[in-house]
Length: 409
Image (cartoon, rainbow, N blue to C red; front, top):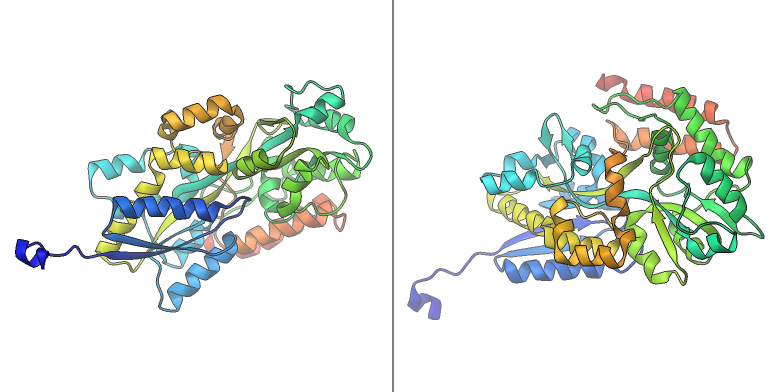
């Protein structure tokens, strides 16, 4: 009645559906819920139904199933490496088409270039970085001291990694563990980059699985267990490695920086975080999820979705998300917030993943990416478990990838 008396029309609410994954430890769904609650207070005419849908693969399947089943989502957080498949299926729209103001166009340019690589195809931006990471080296400083090692000098090269790991390996305790389930292609990509080999072409139509440097990289990873005996034989589980590290079953591990806050909460010892060691060069792939805008949304929905993505990636939220998780703050401005500056001063491990962006390469992504990635992961696991030699495994994966990518060349 008051509205009628004043002549003001009630504001119409726009409702959005978003699917998102969690691939690391911690109660991160509560963090997302809190950020969305904050968004609703600031934007009362927009309602976001955020649906946690499992890991990255499960989230993609659920989001696409909903769209094809007539229950469309307007946006989602999906793997950054899904971009080629999403474009090919005509499911997403570029952010370039959604922005219209100078402020919005400036926002598109505000992110770390290394985190934008996976989302940019054919000169357009299809994905905006959100929960992004690099792989970092976690190491137990107490175990370094017990082994007579300098706790402030983590290994910087492959040779040092082997040397240090040998001193840390004893009585069922290993020097180094690198997970070989979950995302084996991702971990292997780090070895390949460090050995000077990028695994895919810039246009996603060619891979370099059988290059000598690639095979050499896989041989080195295999040798950590088979030759040097500083890592356990067989599979090392992605999902339980963090616990193995915090329970002192390994003195060092490679894992996503997205686990940093969970490691900090669980470790009962002093631990350090370092760049991954180099062979021919430093390097890690970027990783994680991007925001995507789905095709089919109304203009009002697309505008509301853009408002939401900008809110979630604003420097203050990017800083809060980085502190809550360990993921990289997605923009330089996020590291200039008082919150993240203070956090990094008290906990310098928090900026290692950001510093590694200088040496980072886009995460492995090609056309037919799921099947090509599966071929690579299968090859890595076959070599690590001794079922095939690194050379035979990689040549087989190359043949599979060539067949899958033939129609795109």
